[in-house]
Image 1: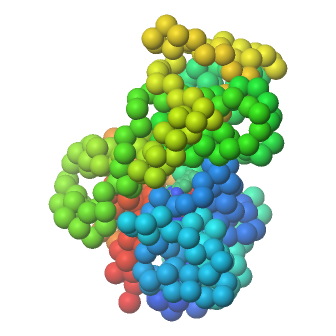
Image 2: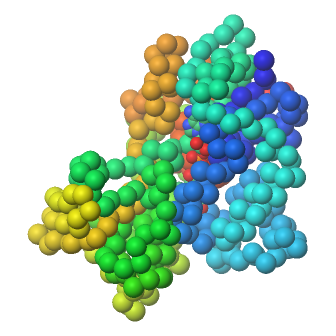
Image 3: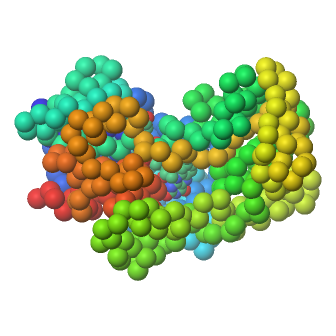
Length: 391
Ligand SMILES: Cc1cc2nc3c(=O)[nH]c(=O)nc-3n(C[C@H](O)[C@H](O)[C@H](O)COP(=O)(O)OP(=O)(O)OC[C@H]3O[C@@H](n4cnc5c(N)ncnc54)[C@H](O)[C@@H]3O)c2cc1C
């Protein structure tokens, strides 16, 4: 029996594997990270590649290391120097630098050796821990940490879902197999979405080829440096959050605090410049109806009465708000009476335990950590809370 099984080896699972083995001295042969991908952060790589982003939205102090200065130190090394680019003000690192730093952390702490390839499909309580069913057999562990993220649940709007069912040329940038680079170089591409990923995708598509690119947003992009204010990280904003007994109020606070549909100023400037030089069209409107099937072009009628015809539509509408995990987690919740709030998300204690030996991080820890739980910094915040219960 393992001491720890972390389910999910993205940013959160990989950070927690580092934290537990290096900072909490869990012996390496007592901990494993289960993930469908053999390589750590493979899903992060897929998502960031699909978007075509060049810089992170978060500052350099938020990384896969516990030490907030780790990326800036790494940026001065031979490996880091050629990639050492930052967006000023908050020193947001280039994606290439962030990713090289992750690889450096993974190699340095031998984190890849902790991985097991597989997907969890069931959870069964045992006298001294949990049994996890996987596609490759069962694994027993005293502690199971759910780090499954939300990036496997792309949000399809109802009109888009209907088009998808008719085999129309529509994609979601977070669907499995989406390949930005394989999109046609000619014709009219329409990107639908209101936030930074939609903006970055449209900008990257507009950079090359003879195609026409339109970005359809519900409203003019709002400008915020981050997707939630920095005061949520150890500042005043979160002071009373975790003491609220009303979980509906906590959910409301999270929704209000997350600047969804916003972009940082540099991305906003790039959008405006691309529009000004005619590389990109920005259209503000909401889809009222959609038509298209097979290989045919898609027509979107907007609530304003205007119609857009596109050869291909790419949704950049983020992730579904439903609790990640799906059916196997639903069964475990029902079988063991795991407490959930009205929004379906776990109600956990102050050390992120959902039940004895069952812990959460990422979106599943959102009602305890607050609006930054899903972000890179959320992994460090989760580790600190989980660590309080470990001697
Ligand atoms: C394009 C993009 C850019 C972002 N940029 C930033 C940024 O600049 N700064 C920031 O702070 N945040 C950013 N985020 C938000 C957040 O940091 C990322 O979404 C990050 O990937 C979350 O990490 P995670 O480990 O929670 O989830 P994931 O990366 O989704 O990893 C979860 C892993 O769990 C696996 N998994 C799921 N179900 C199971 C199962 N049943 N069994 C086993 N494994 C399973 C998945 O396959 C996946 O490998 C960004 C997100 C996206 C999509």
